[in-house]
Amino acid sequence: KTPEVQRCVVAVGLHAAGIDFNALDRQPVHAVFLLLSPEEQPEAHLAAMETLFGTLSQEQFRKFLKQARSVAEVVTLLDEADANPPAR
Image (cartoon, rainbow, N blue to C red; front, side, top):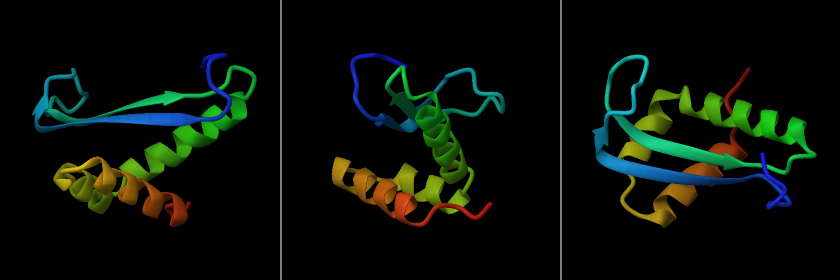
């Protein structure tokens, strides 16, 4: 959380081969997300985290994300996920 942003924003880093990131399953990590949100909007931060975790729990999304080769492809995947959130 930071006073430097007015709304939630996310940055995504992808690594095709995967990196050692001390994952719980000890598998290489192929995507790293940085979520920034306004300090005075903790509910927006929690909602964004919930949405992101829900999306990442979908095997098909992770598969397509791992195959993405451009910023445009990642943005399209995130837009589609945002338009079709996982069922709760």
